[in-house]
Length: 213
Image 1 (cartoon, rainbow, N blue to C red):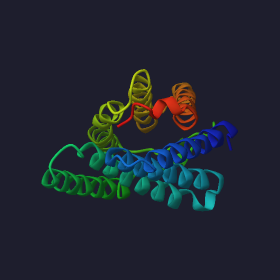
Image 2 (image 1 turned 180 degrees about the horizontal axis):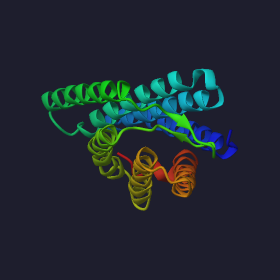
Image 3 (image 1 turned 90 degrees about the vertical axis):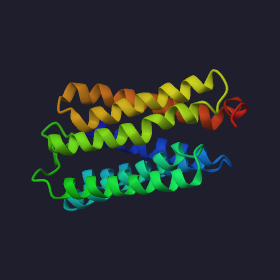
Image 4 (image 1 turned 30 degrees about the vertical axis):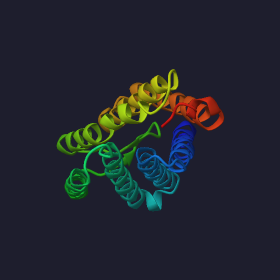
Protein backbone atom coordinates (compact mmCIF):
# COMPACT_ATOMS: atom_id res chain seq x y z
CA UNK A 1 0.00 0.00 0.00
CA UNK A 2 1.24 3.45 -0.94
CA UNK A 3 0.57 6.05 1.77
CA UNK A 4 0.64 8.91 -0.74
CA UNK A 5 -2.08 7.22 -2.79
CA UNK A 6 -4.27 6.83 0.30
CA UNK A 7 -3.73 10.49 1.18
CA UNK A 8 -4.59 11.47 -2.40
CA UNK A 9 -7.89 9.58 -2.31
CA UNK A 10 -8.80 10.84 1.16
CA UNK A 11 -7.97 14.45 0.21
CA UNK A 12 -10.22 14.16 -2.84
CA UNK A 13 -13.06 12.82 -0.70
CA UNK A 14 -12.60 15.74 1.70
CA UNK A 15 -12.25 18.43 -0.97
CA UNK A 16 -15.09 17.25 -3.22
CA UNK A 17 -17.32 16.69 -0.20
CA UNK A 18 -16.71 20.12 1.33
CA UNK A 19 -17.05 21.94 -1.98
CA UNK A 20 -20.12 19.91 -2.90
CA UNK A 21 -21.82 20.75 0.36
CA UNK A 22 -20.97 24.44 -0.01
CA UNK A 23 -22.35 24.69 -3.55
CA UNK A 24 -25.41 22.62 -2.62
CA UNK A 25 -26.27 25.10 0.14
CA UNK A 26 -26.77 27.91 -2.38
CA UNK A 27 -30.13 28.80 -3.96
CA UNK A 28 -28.76 29.15 -7.50
CA UNK A 29 -29.75 25.96 -9.43
CA UNK A 30 -26.42 25.82 -11.26
CA UNK A 31 -24.60 25.79 -7.93
CA UNK A 32 -26.94 23.21 -6.38
CA UNK A 33 -26.66 20.68 -9.20
CA UNK A 34 -22.93 21.28 -9.42
CA UNK A 35 -22.73 20.59 -5.69
CA UNK A 36 -24.63 17.32 -6.06
CA UNK A 37 -22.22 16.29 -8.79
CA UNK A 38 -19.24 17.04 -6.55
CA UNK A 39 -20.78 14.99 -3.74
CA UNK A 40 -21.07 12.01 -6.09
CA UNK A 41 -17.42 12.57 -6.98
CA UNK A 42 -16.61 12.44 -3.28
CA UNK A 43 -18.55 9.17 -3.05
CA UNK A 44 -16.59 7.78 -6.00
CA UNK A 45 -13.26 8.51 -4.32
CA UNK A 46 -14.59 7.10 -1.05
CA UNK A 47 -15.40 3.81 -2.77
CA UNK A 48 -11.99 3.72 -4.44
CA UNK A 49 -10.32 4.43 -1.08
CA UNK A 50 -12.15 1.52 0.57
CA UNK A 51 -11.28 -0.78 -2.31
CA UNK A 52 -7.65 0.28 -2.22
CA UNK A 53 -7.18 -0.50 1.46
CA UNK A 54 -9.34 -3.66 1.40
CA UNK A 55 -8.30 -6.04 -1.37
CA UNK A 56 -11.32 -8.29 -0.79
CA UNK A 57 -13.60 -5.43 -1.85
CA UNK A 58 -11.31 -3.99 -4.50
CA UNK A 59 -13.12 -4.78 -7.77
CA UNK A 60 -16.60 -4.17 -6.33
CA UNK A 61 -15.52 -0.80 -4.94
CA UNK A 62 -13.93 0.18 -8.25
CA UNK A 63 -17.26 -0.60 -9.93
CA UNK A 64 -19.32 1.33 -7.36
CA UNK A 65 -16.91 4.25 -7.65
CA UNK A 66 -17.28 4.26 -11.43
CA UNK A 67 -21.08 4.32 -11.04
CA UNK A 68 -20.88 7.29 -8.65
CA UNK A 69 -18.50 9.09 -11.02
CA UNK A 70 -20.79 8.56 -14.01
CA UNK A 71 -23.80 9.79 -12.03
CA UNK A 72 -21.82 12.93 -11.15
CA UNK A 73 -21.38 13.61 -14.87
CA UNK A 74 -25.15 13.58 -15.36
CA UNK A 75 -25.59 16.21 -12.64
CA UNK A 76 -22.79 18.30 -14.15
CA UNK A 77 -24.54 18.11 -17.51
CA UNK A 78 -27.88 19.05 -15.96
CA UNK A 79 -26.24 22.00 -14.18
CA UNK A 80 -24.72 23.23 -17.45
CA UNK A 81 -28.19 23.24 -19.07
CA UNK A 82 -29.86 25.48 -16.48
CA UNK A 83 -29.88 28.51 -18.77
CA UNK A 84 -31.79 26.58 -21.44
CA UNK A 85 -35.50 25.81 -21.72
CA UNK A 86 -37.12 23.09 -19.64
CA UNK A 87 -37.57 20.83 -22.67
CA UNK A 88 -33.89 21.21 -23.59
CA UNK A 89 -32.82 20.39 -20.04
CA UNK A 90 -34.99 17.27 -19.97
CA UNK A 91 -33.82 16.07 -23.38
CA UNK A 92 -30.17 16.83 -22.71
CA UNK A 93 -30.22 15.14 -19.30
CA UNK A 94 -32.02 12.09 -20.72
CA UNK A 95 -29.38 11.77 -23.43
CA UNK A 96 -26.70 12.10 -20.75
CA UNK A 97 -28.27 9.32 -18.69
CA UNK A 98 -28.36 7.02 -21.72
CA UNK A 99 -24.75 7.89 -22.53
CA UNK A 100 -23.40 7.07 -19.07
CA UNK A 101 -25.41 3.83 -18.92
CA UNK A 102 -23.87 2.85 -22.25
CA UNK A 103 -20.37 3.76 -21.03
CA UNK A 104 -20.86 1.74 -17.85
CA UNK A 105 -22.06 -1.34 -19.73
CA UNK A 106 -19.22 -1.18 -22.26
CA UNK A 107 -16.67 -0.73 -19.47
CA UNK A 108 -18.26 -3.37 -17.24
CA UNK A 109 -17.96 -6.08 -19.84
CA UNK A 110 -14.57 -5.13 -21.24
CA UNK A 111 -11.82 -7.75 -20.82
CA UNK A 112 -9.57 -5.52 -18.69
CA UNK A 113 -9.70 -5.34 -14.90
CA UNK A 114 -8.44 -2.67 -12.51
CA UNK A 115 -5.32 -3.49 -10.52
CA UNK A 116 -2.78 -2.07 -8.08
CA UNK A 117 0.72 -1.75 -9.48
CA UNK A 118 3.92 -2.73 -7.64
CA UNK A 119 4.39 0.98 -6.87
CA UNK A 120 1.01 0.99 -5.13
CA UNK A 121 -0.85 2.97 -7.77
CA UNK A 122 -4.43 2.13 -8.66
CA UNK A 123 -4.87 1.64 -12.39
CA UNK A 124 -8.38 1.39 -13.81
CA UNK A 125 -6.83 -0.40 -16.80
CA UNK A 126 -9.50 0.73 -19.25
CA UNK A 127 -9.30 -0.35 -22.87
CA UNK A 128 -8.50 2.48 -25.33
CA UNK A 129 -12.11 2.48 -26.52
CA UNK A 130 -13.49 2.82 -22.98
CA UNK A 131 -10.92 5.53 -22.24
CA UNK A 132 -12.19 7.41 -25.27
CA UNK A 133 -15.78 7.16 -24.02
CA UNK A 134 -14.84 8.47 -20.58
CA UNK A 135 -12.81 11.35 -22.02
CA UNK A 136 -15.63 12.41 -24.34
CA UNK A 137 -18.21 12.14 -21.54
CA UNK A 138 -16.08 14.11 -19.08
CA UNK A 139 -15.31 16.76 -21.71
CA UNK A 140 -18.90 17.29 -22.83
CA UNK A 141 -20.54 17.05 -19.40
CA UNK A 142 -18.05 18.89 -17.19
CA UNK A 143 -15.92 21.29 -19.20
CA UNK A 144 -18.78 23.61 -20.38
CA UNK A 145 -19.91 23.89 -16.77
CA UNK A 146 -16.66 25.44 -15.59
CA UNK A 147 -17.31 28.65 -17.50
CA UNK A 148 -20.93 28.80 -16.36
CA UNK A 149 -20.09 28.34 -12.69
CA UNK A 150 -17.13 30.74 -12.89
CA UNK A 151 -19.26 33.42 -14.60
CA UNK A 152 -21.39 33.68 -11.47
CA UNK A 153 -18.43 34.79 -9.34
CA UNK A 154 -16.83 38.19 -9.25
CA UNK A 155 -13.17 38.83 -10.04
CA UNK A 156 -10.65 37.44 -9.08
CA UNK A 157 -12.55 34.42 -7.77
CA UNK A 158 -14.14 33.72 -11.14
CA UNK A 159 -10.67 33.05 -12.54
CA UNK A 160 -9.81 30.79 -9.61
CA UNK A 161 -12.98 28.74 -10.08
CA UNK A 162 -12.63 28.56 -13.87
CA UNK A 163 -8.98 27.56 -14.04
CA UNK A 164 -9.06 25.56 -10.83
CA UNK A 165 -11.75 23.23 -12.14
CA UNK A 166 -10.15 23.13 -15.59
CA UNK A 167 -7.01 21.88 -13.83
CA UNK A 168 -9.12 19.21 -12.11
CA UNK A 169 -10.60 18.28 -15.47
CA UNK A 170 -7.17 17.87 -17.06
CA UNK A 171 -6.01 15.90 -14.03
CA UNK A 172 -8.98 13.58 -14.38
CA UNK A 173 -8.11 12.96 -18.03
CA UNK A 174 -4.54 12.07 -17.01
CA UNK A 175 -5.76 9.66 -14.33
CA UNK A 176 -7.94 7.92 -16.90
CA UNK A 177 -5.38 7.68 -19.69
CA UNK A 178 -1.83 7.75 -18.29
CA UNK A 179 0.14 4.75 -17.04
CA UNK A 180 3.41 6.62 -16.36
CA UNK A 181 4.19 6.57 -12.64
CA UNK A 182 6.02 9.91 -12.57
CA UNK A 183 3.28 11.65 -14.55
CA UNK A 184 0.63 10.27 -12.19
CA UNK A 185 2.55 11.43 -9.11
CA UNK A 186 2.85 14.96 -10.53
CA UNK A 187 -0.81 14.93 -11.57
CA UNK A 188 -1.82 13.81 -8.08
CA UNK A 189 0.08 16.67 -6.45
CA UNK A 190 -1.44 19.21 -8.86
CA UNK A 191 -4.97 17.92 -8.20
CA UNK A 192 -4.40 17.94 -4.44
CA UNK A 193 -2.92 21.44 -4.30
CA UNK A 194 -5.54 22.97 -6.59
CA UNK A 195 -8.38 21.32 -4.66
CA UNK A 196 -6.87 22.60 -1.39
CA UNK A 197 -6.76 26.18 -2.72
CA UNK A 198 -10.33 25.88 -4.02
CA UNK A 199 -11.97 24.54 -0.89
CA UNK A 200 -10.07 26.69 1.58
CA UNK A 201 -10.89 29.81 -0.46
CA UNK A 202 -14.56 29.04 -1.09
CA UNK A 203 -15.24 27.83 2.44
CA UNK A 204 -13.35 30.42 4.49
CA UNK A 205 -13.24 33.56 2.36
CA UNK A 206 -16.60 35.30 2.52
CA UNK A 207 -15.55 37.76 -0.17
CA UNK A 208 -15.45 34.88 -2.65
CA UNK A 209 -19.25 34.65 -2.62
CA UNK A 210 -20.02 38.37 -2.44
CA UNK A 211 -20.27 38.64 -6.21
CA UNK A 212 -21.86 35.24 -6.80
CA UNK A 213 -25.33 35.26 -8.33
